[in-house]
Image 1: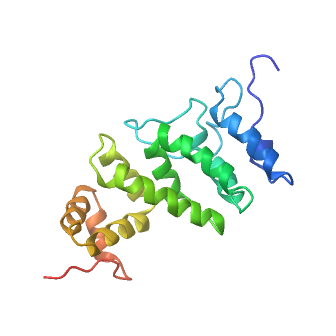
Image 2 (image 1 turned 180 degrees about the horizontal axis):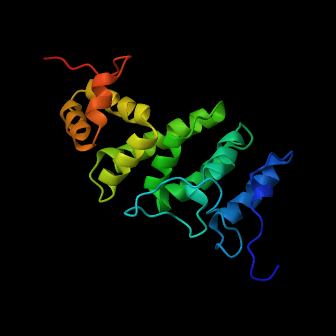
Image 3 (image 1 turned 60 degrees about the vertical axis):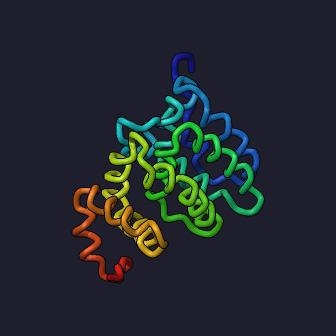
Length: 189
């Protein structure tokens, strides 16, 4: 149809030929919104300070994240990881926010952990211009992830002061940490 983007729904469904789905998704994720437009496919909040990646909104779509993580099994891992590698370069803050929003299973859980390990130091801990806004969005959408990140920092030598500084910099996080029932954070005197 002239002037209309191709439908994204079929791309985001379960396919029997996952390899073909990955090949098509790889092109669709980088295409202009006139070809594939993912902006209405379960978008998530991204601060205006962040690069959003391609104009088609692919990396800001929970539906895209779900299908990629679900199909990242042994045979599809390399293809999915290479798509995320592109996103890590173009919009690392969006990768951080998207990974925090997901509750993946199986190989998707492994991939999400790898993505978080790569982007948390750059986009959450270090002072990038968008870091304060990203921290607030992550805390609003996934407070448990914020607490876990800070817990890991608090238990590593040399980063506990930074963990306290970050906790104080995110509105509402100190209350969440103090109310945290499992007691993720512990500080020694």
